[in-house]
Image 1 (spheres, one colour):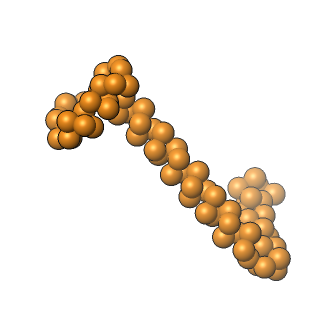
Image 2 (cartoon, helix red, strand yellow):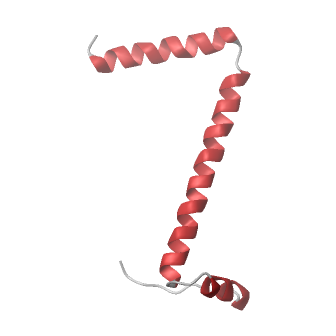
Image 3 (cartoon, one colour):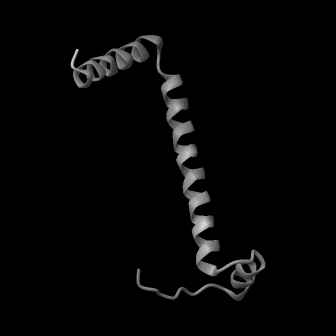
Length: 75
């Protein structure tokens, strides 16, 4: 992949240096961790929403999912 440059404050640059390694490795690791954290935040938000549904609404959603699962399993 082609390289590019980004502008950061000297404070941020120094923080990256203090973590050691190459800038690319440090930034990639930080981005991976941030993406993972956001994924789990979204998953937890989805779970909270699902839990907020009434028992009837949850049963309807499970029934729809069962129909889809059966269609893909060939049953």
